[in-house]
Length: 419
Ligand code: UD1
Ligand code: MG
Image (cartoon, rainbow, N blue to C red; front, side, top):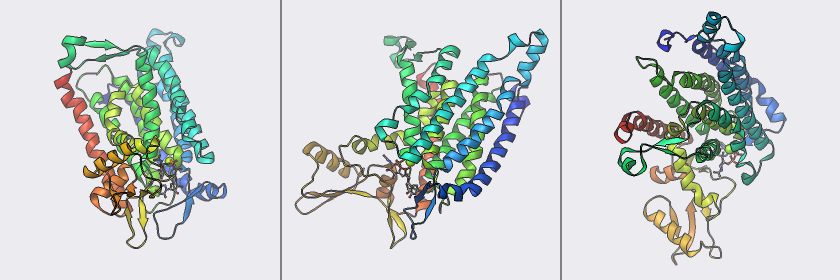
């Protein structure tokens, strides 16, 4: 395998080893620190169970700490990898050949991930208001954008063949490209945080996305000739492999019946890992293809996120204690508080399209509508499900959609873009 990677495979093997270590360390820390977190008040009620036990929350903070230590330990491998060192010896000018730009990318990634972890822990401790925390990921992404500016600086997008007669082959969108990347940085962590609320789902969706990104990297690394993007994709693997290590340890404890919760820290942190690798690897559009279920969940949530329909503190599916199954949770309406006419029309339309379950009384007034999340919608379609079954089905759906995204990227892209 090392040879396949053009002789510079040593850091990759070191990264694999460190990822194994990250798994083991996270696994042990999750076990050890549960009671400590409980004592510090970092706990949450597992709502979809018969006995609503309290379990430790914010385990994301612990695994993020393990992850950050591991990627910091990896710094020497990145800058003193065989290829870099050989070049140094050959020229005999050690200081001048030091791979400053590699180190800069790597450190900027670490700074971004540390900032986002800080935000996550703050949120788990103090429940920061939505509108206050919304833009913080954009600030966390500034070091990445600076490195992107220096290393790539590409701000033009390739125009699909049918539009080329009008727009030309490339359109330079200039500063807008940075706005776009900052938006991806805001979107990715937040979208993972709102596709949540049943055991295991935050971690399993993140693992699927990370595995698909790693497969995408391997597609570039395993080409018969050295691909020009080899370095970016190796870089991406150095961040994804330890992420998979800590996430698998977390999933072990967070899968149904959960013994720990991941907290907002994990959701922000995992979303930011994807942002880091995809901005510095220059494949943010591929990331968007892999986030299709999250994009759907966000768009579907818009009526509640923007207050057109009341949004309760929790929108997770409702646990039916009699059957032990999850059912869609609902927003109740009273005769006094009915949706305004355009909203009512929209709700009824969604009901007809089977994109929402709407309950009306005999006089046609709204009694309840299901909450706008993909988890509730899935239950509207599939009927009541046990919690782990729902998590599994959503994870399988994410995997299928993700492979389709990769297919679009590598197969169909040739039809609409010239290679
Ligand atoms: C987001 C969602 C919210 C959802 C919550 C669940 C939006 C706008 N916000 O809020 O609707 O209810 O995530 O995580 O969509 N919990 C369980 N079982 C689980 C996971 C979580 O019961 O498997 C409960 C626990 O009580 C836990 C709490 O959810 O303490 C964590 O919620 P938190 O992450 O703080 O909610 P938000 O991210 O703000
Ligand atoms: Mg959350």
